Image (cartoon, rainbow, N blue to C red; front, side, top):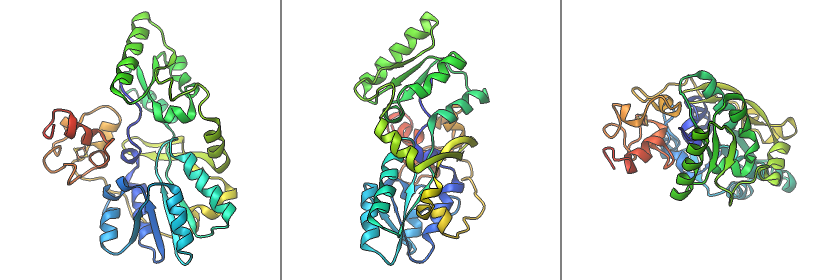
Length: 309
Ligand code: SF4
């Protein structure tokens, strides 16, 4: 059994991280982002290094903080890095609508969002991993509901259970999956009833739908998956960083020896990486899976009984 497609930072391909770093080099641009992003290594640098070298990079706790920075710095262009799953897209959509309402003209979003159900289909279709059951992510499902997972049970005969993140949630989820497997069933169930409704959060979905439309997206280790990303609709092009700035991120290069892509596809584990716990640690991450607290390598290092556990 495997869980959802990992953490959003980990699945963001270097080609996309490089865009953020290239944008930070443009004079007058202030990059705003959540803190975890700073240490993530791109092909040649990171936002942390760019900041140390003089780029304007500011950590924020919400998109509304980024909007405030835009209002306070009318002579600069403020770019928010839209990295995340369906969980973060609604708040970013809300920030764009608010910028429009307030007439803020120097706020932009680099939309690198990822949508989970299409990439799960791509992973299953690849045939690389054999799934007996799927732990569907509770945070994503709180937005999209449980209906979007139904194709997995219906088309592939794989039991699905939406789980929360507490230890008891996971245990209950596994118990429900095992019961389906033992009974030869495949359907979508919700173990995380306190957070997820079958139809999802209608208000959040409406916000996303209003501002964004699906587009192809590049996933680390997986490649480009149709309709698995979000881009700004034409009506909101004036807020789209890619449409309004010229930048050249250069050719993407993966860190030598890093197997994050294989780990994200579920075909290898952190212990299979020869850099794990040696050249690559949470203090000196080589790949993105060691950066975020949600990353497989970081979690395995801290809690998995590996070198750091
Ligand atoms: S241990 Fe480091 S280098 Fe190896 S796969 Fe994980 S993040 Fe990449």
